[in-house]
Every structure is written in structure tokens, then in C-alpha cells.
Amino acid sequence: MPELRTDPLSGLRVIVAGERSERPGAFLPPAKRPPIDVDGDPFAPGHEDHTPPELDRDGDPWTVRVVPNLFPALAEVVDEGGEDPLASGRGQPELFATRPAAGAHEVIVNAPDSVWSLSEVGPEQVERAMAMWRRRMNAHADSSYAHLIVNEGREAGASLPHTHSQLYALGFVPAQIARERERFTAYSDRTEGRNLLEDVLQEEVRRRERVVTVDSEAVLLCPFASRVPFHMQLVPRRPAARFEDEGPLGAGLLHAALARLRDALGGLPPLNMWVRTAPRGAEHFCWRIEVLPRLAHLAGLELGTGVHLNVLPPESAARRLRESG
Image (cartoon, rainbow, N blue to C red; front, side, top):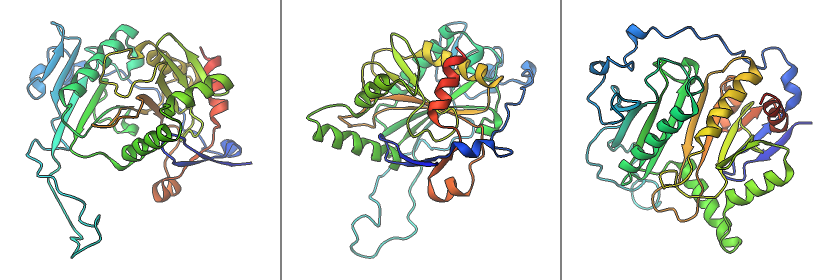
């Protein structure tokens, strides 16, 4: 029977309907990706003049490189702020309010290799890339929220195939992150200072239904209210509010997670990944990394209501990922 599950971190609801996995077209098979044309790859070594001027790099010759996005979604302008015109409910509301989309939008080239995925480089290179994620997020510590993403595959929004990340330094806290911040805070208040994600993780490890694997730094699991098939979550073993702060990165486990996904499916699907970190000023939070494969299309239910329909129970996904190791 389909279940309605509530994500303990966000409060968002997900319908888990495993029976629907038998219907035709329930899963999109991973497509074989052709080799990248190195001559036309603007992120390949030797093509540094094909990108905007460099902001940062690791090593010489470089192993990770940072440049401004050539087509930025955010502008480097002074944000004059301003409250939501409908927040107070008083006076004449401004129904069509605008303000500059201020902030920074950067591209982090994860490796010099002309490959599609972080899974195609070694764990040491993944750690170098993640260390640069941390460094660039710290470079924008004055922003309200720093959102680090990885899109792999055109179907997941990647306009260039060479493995890269993007950093959005936002001048506001997005509603979903603000909601999570409130839930972490409320949980801490109710439990005399306990951390919400730490307690979720402890219970997941106790039950072992959705845990995929564990190493000395982090735990990999398929979350209780997984939004899509093979949704994975990497959580540090010791809770830390901000990914930007010193401490384990979980690079080895992230690399292993992508390898398990590839082996379980016979190929790596397009996917979206992001770092969820504490917004500026948050006292109660814990960072994590979310990995959402694109094995099904978002349709009218998801887009119209925000309620995801997942046809593969996370318990089944975790079991298949464990067996693929």
C-alpha cells in the first residue's frame, strides 16, 4: 500500500508507492555517455583563456580551478535589501516588487580531467574538489546563504559535460532552508539542546534499514522520505552546523556512493547533488550532502504541489546499493 511519509528535516511530504515501479516507463535507463571532445572543452587544461578570469585555483599546474560563471544568475551589485512587501499586511502592498538579484555565481572545475562525473576521478581528487567547495563557501561568508551544487548530465541541467560545480552566494535565505532552520531550532528547544539530524542518524543506524555504508567520517543512507529512486544522503558522523568549518569532508564516502550507484544501475544516471549547510546566523543545524539521480521525470504532482512520488522505497534502494559494494 502506498505510504505518505514526512521528511523529519524539512517537513515536506513524499508518497512512496513501490507498486508503481512495475508500470512501463517507471525508470529512465542510464544512457551511455560519449567521450568528451577535449579540443572543444573550455575547462580542459590549456584552455584557460576560454573562461572568464580565474578567481582561485589549487596547485600549479592546477587540480581544481574557479572562475565566474560566464552567464551569471546573480549580479555583483549592492543589494539595498528590503522586506517582503506583503509580510506586514499593512498599508498598500506592492504586488509586483522587484530588487536586484545580488550575489555571486561561480563555477568550480572539479578536476582537470575531461570526464563527465566525479565518479570518474579518484577519491583524492574528489577531496581536492570538496576542499575548494569549502574554501569558496568561506570566501562568501558574508552572504545569507551559500548553495553549492553539482549537476551531472544534460538532463540534470549541466550545460557543459566536464565535471564542475556551481556556487550561488545568495543575499537571502531560501524558504526551504529557512524552514529547515526553524525545525532544527524547534527540535533543539523541545529536547534541551539535541541536534535533529544527529538524532535522525542515530535512529537510522540503530534500525539499519536505510543505511548503505559507513566510514570513519560519515554515513551514507537513503533517507526515510526519499524524493526519488536511489536518493542518497551523506551525513557527518559528528554533527557540524556548517560544511565550511574545519572537519571531515566525507570525500571518500561520496566517491564510493557514486560508484555504488553506477554499479547498481549498470551506468551512472544524470543526477543533481548539493551541499546543505547552515544559513548565516543559524545556531542549530547540521550539514549534509544530498544526491538525487534523475531516473524519473518530475510531473504535474511534483511541480504542482511540491509532493514527490517515489516508486522505489528507500529500504529497497539501500539494499540494492549495499549489494553493489
